[in-house]
Image 1 (cartoon, rainbow, N blue to C red):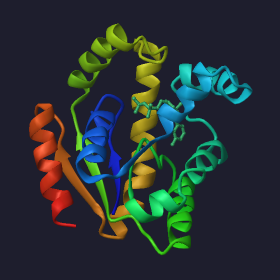
Image 2: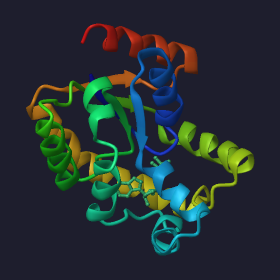
Image 3: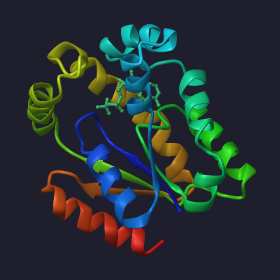
Image 4: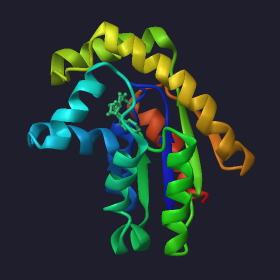
Length: 188
Ligand code: ADP
């Protein structure tokens, strides 16, 4: 089973992806986490991507596609994955379909977490204090939210056409969102 968690920055994708990973044995694949690992490892790629990420902009498709490709191996092909923060462009979505098709797999559901902007801002401010992510500041957040509006308008129709898209109220508490997710996932 392969699921995409879709939603604006601060929607709770990472939190829910971890829960799905624990409960269903799916591999959580977060391009944001992979990029932050490059930054903390001070790799050349990390240092280059940090500049883009701190501005709230998207990093080039080929970089994130290459990162995901490294994981879409026998493990993901046998157990399945929950994609968090990927794909963000139609090129990424098409690349993902092609990678999965190589092992006879596909995306089974794209779940969009809906959270209103005011709630997102307070969640991001809270996370800034707790985790100190350098892109969790007001300016970068505005750009990320704007980027989200653009890329969701690009990516969601791709999956809507395939009948894979569904929405979920992400304003509820963590456990209620998980419960709603379980209901969707158990049906697949
Ligand atoms: P959030 O969902 O809160 O924005 P992420 O950890 O998913 O946080 O992403 C942080 C940053 O990493 C993004 O603003 C972007 O610069 C970069 N990034 C992550 N995933 C992708 C992707 N699939 N395509 C392009 N850029 C990405």
